Image (cartoon, rainbow, N blue to C red; front, top):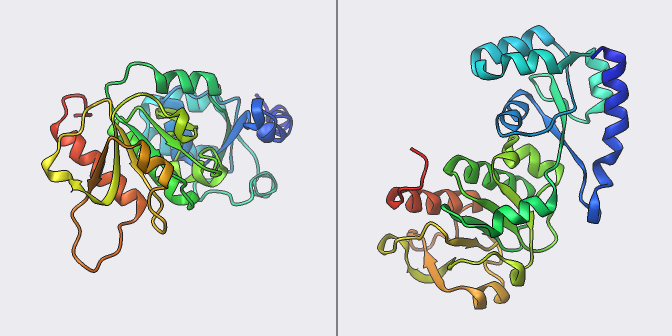
Length: 261
């Protein structure tokens, strides 16, 4: 693909970021080499990828992703830095940007509702887009089956995708309301819960986390099968959301044969 074809494709697809079914964007922006690397490794369909310095991007591939050297060599098209700035509001320091096809919502929901060997993370009314992205990254690293958000935050918002570093494609990510949650025992993190150190979290668990400011909603708390608490020093009010998710997934992984090696 030459530069003209790549730019025509980009400009043709970028407006579809808001035209998917049921309001979901059909394509998402991948910002930076690492986001593109992760997306490709986990099967994302990437119709166009641009870079400001092709030789530098391919050198990164040789050093950090030799498994993708061939794919990236065939995909990356070099454009000048000014053109890239005109297409991407904040070009990544690696000078790489791509558009990836968002997984079909029905396929994502089917993955969440099928038989699971690892937990699903539920973010109950999250507020912070960057934190949500960090949670997706954690969930992917631990091999969690998915990340579900309740409330108005879109887990595929560009800022969330940026925070997830392309790892939305490594797990099932979807917005659902509490009555729509997948089946499975729901363990909700709450200061009044039982100490997590005395519990074993099952592989098919739903692990629910409230917002840092407001905690769990009454609706989700009522749906919970178990309330669970993380150890925390007195007079410390809360952990960062992503930190709480990371500690909980580590506790699960420490006792599970289904966790990544």
